[in-house]
Image: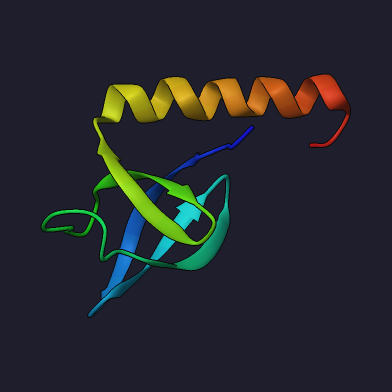
Length: 75
């Protein structure tokens, strides 16, 4: 099973971007998505931005991820 994590683009550097997920920042490749801009919400898998999502999807997925982590005792 694969898991894509919701993230927000906070810095763009040519073919890469810095994104933030649950307070954690990471550098990801953005070549697979069209015209990324600051503030875009995306799904990240294995270091690649794979899809843009809207703010409502981001909030839902972020909430779901937090709930999953609370259920495992990993906060």
